[in-house]
Length: 486
Ligand code: C2O
Ligand code: CU
Image (cartoon, rainbow, N blue to C red):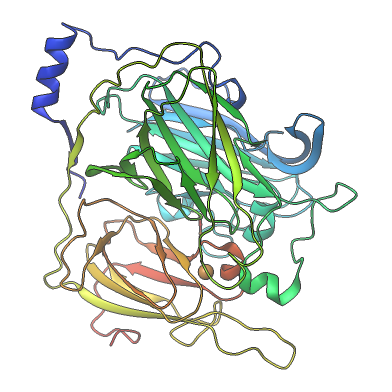
């Protein structure tokens, strides 16, 4: 699983040489200031060692501008919404001195990163909550290239909803996909009441819990409907993460295509193309686009309606997520799409221990409340599931509810497989997978040498808060019996 080789197709490499003798770095085609409305703040590195990125990160309440003349008070990392972009190279050591200046305890969880358990940021499991005024130092090596993100794991639904999230981009200098103009997009949403105060975390009561609260303002890099300046026909690489508390994004390029080259755990086996892109909470996608349009015109990119359960399409409207503004330059002939591929060795399904997880939602009680359950138990009542160090398991996750759930496992990637245990092609490493209502997902997960109690949960964070969570305890020897498996 760690032997990951990235190869660019020989044919394209040869073509590239023919076209531009010796040109190692791809050319930029973007108009000047093209991404000015998307800039993410980066923090200074305190450490002179080029392989160590050492930063200070402070969570605090701050005023931020989400649109011209729309200044709001949010919960932030370093006064920014989203938090600063943490950008490092694969193999680097990341040290983050975290200070909590919020009115409540918090932690930092590094979503998707294969950290040691002590660095996983789950209060009561991997560390104590960091109380107001306290600090905690996170320190780990970034083993895998890809786009990850960070967010609190204490009162997650509330704190993420209030604005606490940021992107962690781990570059692989060798994965040159041949596109110079690259952008990281952090998708989210947020709500305020009429007085401009953050909407209460429990607005809508039990119905809000079961639906999952979506913010009224849709944001990209903390801005409402920002404008991206592009040259018609020019390729751009977008690294996108959905950090929203509950909202799904179904991006539509209006007949033009996204070339998907990667997802949660870096590049995928080979590219795929599609006209729409579903990004559920917690997921990441790595895409190349080359939108075309009349020079000087604009093309809005919408998030379309997606049915993730009752209330997600009824009386709802599509949202403008961002707008592309074509420069006056004539449409250029799009260079051939790079054939980015990666050799991925899947875990073997043979001998994998099967673990069945059924997600359920029993009827409401007399007070109109309900809790999600995994195998009939709502977290935190559930006992840990068990796995041995180095053991491969086949998780068969049956979503027996009328809601979709983006299922997330901490600390490990998994690989989606079909009924026969064969990897779904193109192969990709995932840590968050949407399980549509009344469907079954199958994933292979190879637990490595990192022991610990790792969470899994729905990344509609309101669902996680009302029971849709569990833990897997990865320990020294494979257990003989699994109380939970069938
Ligand atoms: Cu994004 Cu428990 O995590
Ligand atoms: Cu859910």
